[in-house]
Length: 525
Image (cartoon, rainbow, N blue to C red; front, top):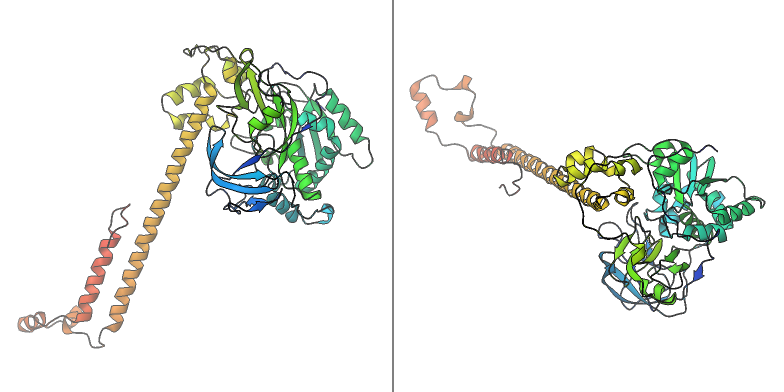
């Protein structure tokens, strides 16, 4: 098929020797597993207690909404703590499980007849099994597959250096990948299925072609895309395969397309056909700072220290620990953090594999960052706006369209930390949006309270009026019946007011004061 180029991008040294990725190695169970719970409000409450015994695949926390994901035990053992633990560059409340070595499992009922089942039931199974995107974003697969698309794209392109997890899956699990492709095509009602892999993945292509030759395995088009970073990004891959651009602020479904990582597809297939919750993933271990580099099958929640120790430990060259690829990964200060669903790789880079440290210099307006930006932004303009605090201007310039690929910072001769500045700007914009939302909610509550108080006051007036005597006093009669003579008027004015009329007047006064209360005051009487 005819491929279309995407704007920008860079060519990076692959650090991937050989034509085929090595077979994944099994990692022994660690002494303990650390499972982070979703942040408060994003998912359901913890479903286990300290001292409780759990089995592999048993739910630790259920998703409460479409954007949350259920969390499952990576192996059998006893819950020893539910407490904050280090995760990435911060902390999160985690369920800590002391494994017992038995690895007992609690599988879900298999749905081998998935072709005959309602689509809603299959999506529900993916949500219950906690299947999320394993390409790095960890977005719930059920929510993503809920939007149909006539084109299904399976993403097997790993354009970051060192990463070989998806390539290993394609080389040594091609049959499962093709079976998963049929399942996902059924779920999103796709009429065309494209499986994208890098042009350098000769071993993976051979394995997939052999699997496609088997009976009943057709219907999938293999497409070799250029190895140019970041071709594995969702928007850039759609551009290369279809020639269409995902609109600013839009999603692939706006182009009637659905993009899924190959490992995510296999996880979805295993959850439905075998009843397996998401409890493990393939992780690339690489870099000159670690012995025994390769691809490992790792249980979620495994401490990075256990993975490195099993691979032979650190070398004297170890200088930096990175979770993920060298371009979009996250540097961490220690190896006590657990492997998560979003952990594609664990890199221990040597000093000679890092960019030489140098002080940041002033932008020289060379334009190299704009030339390589795959989102077609103007990084130097965003830089100036963010440093001047012009968040709204940066938002209008397209800050939210930045995919944080790091290509701009890679080519910047002044070594300006552009990506970090963009991340900080996005966070500041999110804070502003949250504040606006809270202010709008507070105003809505105030208006609702004022309306309620006015309604209650009107009801009190009506009740008082209903209790008034049938014969109204002369002072309450219309002007047409007022006394004609001054003496009569004086007599009427001196007459005492009826109690019901006094109460009604007080109620009306209170209603007027409450309606005139200034915005933001919720303590009006």
